[in-house]
Length: 281
Length: 317
Image 1 (tube, one colour):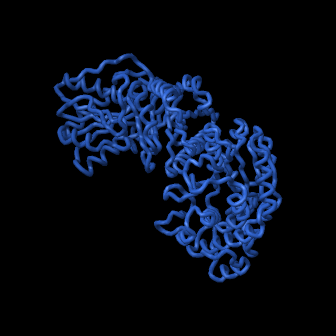
Image 2 (cartoon, helix red, strand yellow):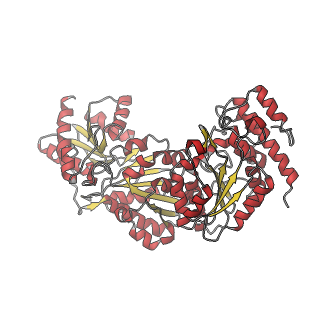
C-alpha cells in the first residue's frame, strides 16, 4: 500500500518548489507543472523501478521521457527530491551557468535527464527508440513518457503513434496530460483534438483513462493498471485529465498561467494554499 | 602527375551498403533504420543477416530520427538512412534537439545527395545539406568520394562516439581509392602534389578534379589535389600547408556555394592565410530533372568547370 500521507506531503512540497522556482526568475511554466505534480510524484516514488544513481543507458531500470519539456519545474523538483541532484541546485533554475535549463537537456549533464525536450512532439519517438533498445538488450523494464495534449498537434506524434502500435512496442506507457489548455487558449478553440483516447485506440493502442489526474490514488491505480497491460502486444496510452495550475486557486481552469510567473503577492497567496511540509529548498 | 585507376564504376551508396554489411557482422551494437528506401540505400544484406537489428519506420523521417536518438539510450549505434533531402531539411529540428543538442551517437546516412540524383528533379536534389549539418554544434560531416571510401567511412564512424552526417550519392562513378583503406575522420588526403594551384574537392568532384589536373598538366599547370572527405572537423593544416605553397585555391563540391565546403575553406584562409579562391559549386540555385552528366555540365560541376576555375584563380594570384 502506498503511503498516501507521505506522498501527499511530497506533492504539496513540490508545488511550493515549482512556484518558488518560477517566481525567482520571473519566468517558466507553472500551470502544466502544477497540473502534473501528482503524476510525477507517483511515477518516481511509487511506480517506476529505479536503480541507485544515474547512467544514460538506463539498463535494468524503468526510464522516463518528458516530451513537453516546458514543465521542467515539476520534473526538476521531483528529480531533486528523489536524490538525483541536490535540492540547493533548484536555486539555479534558468540562471546562467546552470544545469537546470529552461527546458530539460542532457547538454549540461543533469542526472535524470536522458534527452533534450522543449521543441514539441519529439518525445514519443525517443521513448519508442529507448523501448526498442530495451527489447534488444533483453531488459524487461518499461519506458514511460509524458506528453501535453496540445503537443499532439505536432504531426511527428502521429508518426510515432502509428509506429508503436504497428510494430508492437508493448513496453511503452505514454501518458497524455489532458488539461485542455495551451498557450493561446483552450485546445478546443485553438485546434480541437476530439476524442484523444479514441484516436489512440483506432491506431491500435491499449488505452485507459485517469478521470482525475490530480487525485493521487487515481493516478497510482491508473499507472499500475497500465503496467499490468504491458507486454501484451500493444503500447499503452493513459489519457489523464488534469487541471492546469492545480493546487493554486487563481491559477486553475485557465491557460493564463501556462508560461507566466507569479509576482510577490501572488506567490505569497499561492504558498499559503500549499503550506510547507518537507522543508523548502 | 600521380595516376589513379578507375577500378570500375560503382555507386557510393553501394559502398554504404557494403560497410553496413561488414558492421552487421562485426559490431553487435550497430542497428539500422530506414524510411521506406531500403533498395535505394543498398542495405538488403544487413537486413537479411540481422533482421532483429533493422527498423523499418515507413515514410516518417521525423519519427526515424527520434527513434534513432532513443536507441542510443541502451547503448545501440543507430545508422538512420534515407535520401539526403529527407535526412536533413525535412527533419532539421529533430536532428537539432533530439540528436545534436542531446549529444546522441546517431549516424545520419544520406544517399542521393546533390544534382547527381538526376531525373527526379529539384524536389529531391538537396544542395543545402552540408550547410545545415555543419552548423550544428558537435556534428561531424563526411562526404566520401567513391565506393571504397564510402565503405571505409561507414565502418569508421561506428567507432566515433557522437553524431555524424554521412553523405553519399546515387550514380555509378569511378572507384579509384584503395580497397580496404583505413578511414581517418578529419584527415584530408593529398592525392597529387602540385605547385601552381590547390584544388580542394569533396565527394563526386574529387574524381573530376583528377581529370582536370591531368588536362591542366598538359597546359603546363601543376595542380595540387586534396580530397576533403571530412568537411567538419576540417583539416585546417592540410589546407594551409598547401595554399601557402601554391598561393591560390579552387574548391569543388556538389552543393550550394553558400554554406558548403568552399565557405569553410574560405574561413580558414581568411583567418590564417588570405588567398584568391574560386568556387566550383551551385550558385544559390535549385536543380532540375536531367541525366547526372548533363546536370553537372549545366550547373558547372565537372572537370571542365574546375579547369576554368583554375585558370581564373591563377589570374588573381
